[in-house]
Image (cartoon, rainbow over all chains, first blue to last red; front, side, top):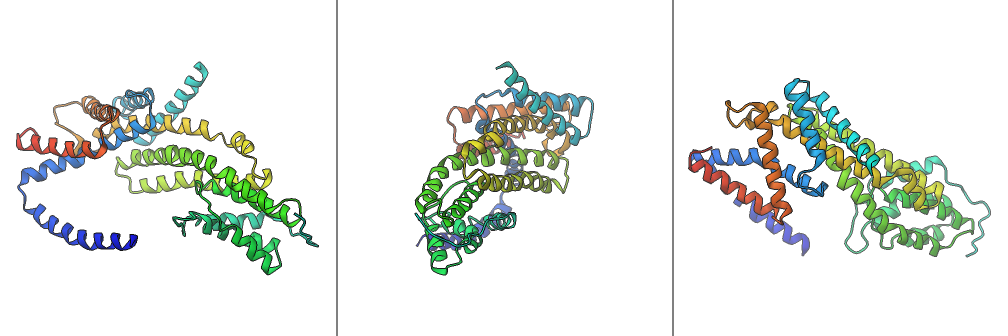
Amino acid sequence: MFFLKSFFLFVLFLPIGFIAVVYFARVPAVFHRAMERFVTLLPFLGAALVVRRLSVRMLDPFLLTGFATAVVFGLVFQLPVLIVTLMTIVMGWMGVRFSEHRS
Amino acid sequence: MSIDHKAVSTIGNLDLLRIFWRALVIQASWSFDRMQSLGFAYALRPVLEKLYPDRAEFESRLTAHMEYFNTQPYLASFILGAVARLEQERAAGRASSEDISRLKAALMAPLGALGDSFFWGSLMPLSSVIAVAFLITGAWWAPLVFLGFYNSWHLAIRAGVLFRGYQSSGDAMDLMVRYRFTKMARLFKAVTLSVLGGILALVASQRPEYRQAAAIPLLGEAGIGLAITVAMASLLWRGGSPIKLMLGLALLCLALAYAGVA
């Protein structure tokens, strides 16, 4: 019964999805632009969920450290992303060592 | 318990490697009533076959391992190693079936909590953000970074704890001292957040679709990304549900598009 329920939902939702795609193609261009922007912003919600899950603070010091590191070395000094990512990893690690040393 | 075997086989490295290989599919036959029991029995089977040449006894031990079992699938290897050791002891008459059941029951829940927190709560997010950091540059190999980073840790720990479990006979303290999962989890979480902060700063410079307007400098764009993330995180902190936030974001985008702002 458990699997049958999933099967019927699948059978029901698959054609609904195909019909929705056809109707979605017909909506005005402004709607498509809005959805394009929505999809662009969605990863920020993902990032917020990661912050919410991993941190006990809203403005997490490690998040801000990584951000500042990438701004300085990635945007100001224009270093490659690979180097900047490695630097953010090192900064995070040093931050943990520093906080452990302080406590 | 006194079971007299004339010559009790000992478990070697090759036998443990066989358990390691079979334990990779421990969840392949997961069931609602006994969870990972079938996978556990399947992983242990070669060792049981070696320890119990008598077919009836082998079948009885294999059936005994069909009892309820559920833990974090990677750290299950530690219990498998410990149980393999105890089965060897049992075959030699130095341990009982109850000892084995008790050990499994005692280790299942703590290792489940520890493993979930380490693997799902810290190693998985860290592997993901490192891969995303490369993905924003358009690197096709970014998913391979995820697979390589995650699996190198996962397989190394899985193999390591299996051998540790066998050598220490399931001494959980020995596992905690050697692996320091809690400390590693804290480190991984901090590094994840740091790399995530870096991604938020770099995304506008790497992906043209994230540029709000050509007039805004990249530093400002980076600040907007961080501000959006912090604003959403603050809504989540205040009890907002991710689904409602997603729908709200869609409605906001629609409103802005129809108002001609975006």
